[in-house]
Length: 287
Image (tube, helix red, strand yellow):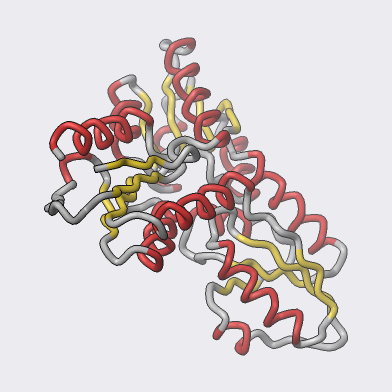
């Protein structure tokens, strides 16, 4: 049996940068209280390791008020980014802010702020409940529209007298993004489309689709809260019916028959290398 692992599997640049920044703070500022605004990335294993180093994730704005009273606090903005309102509030409460927002997400913040200031209505293609999208919405001067499917395009109250700017969640399915954009463009309104799906996401999706189309069994490793990991699973399952989505090796329950000649592995942008290696070694040794 042969094993193919995606070269793009595992931490992307933005995630690695964010995790490294947190670890640096944990080492250099042991005399301070270190927090992240929400989990630094969507991976429970990584968050547990950071908690062991004394780094805690803040779950709500109410919690901020209590924490602020103790003083000597460092707040690390996670890779997904936060809204301008939340960032300003952290400053008001006296937190020392370390910004670990992914550079690709920061670019979207600037784009929607500039475009909405210029009078364009912002359309965000992504999951409204995802923290990255919530953060992007918070940098728009006017109320944005958030959609996730082609069908939702029909519900947008387009106006011939207005202009629009379209951006996307960095981890959105690239093919679905193209389909939604084509439908919007076909309507003939004044629309400026800014492709904001990051290159790492595009390459990861492309490579995963290619591998899944060749193998008998496909394994996708990622946290259940990870948007990009779940999208990889959807993409791979389109190409390979026998696709498994796992968070760690403990979740892997494979029954590989002799007919299985080729197994593929890919992983989301928030999956650490050691988990990928554990799965690889298990498949190689046990099968």
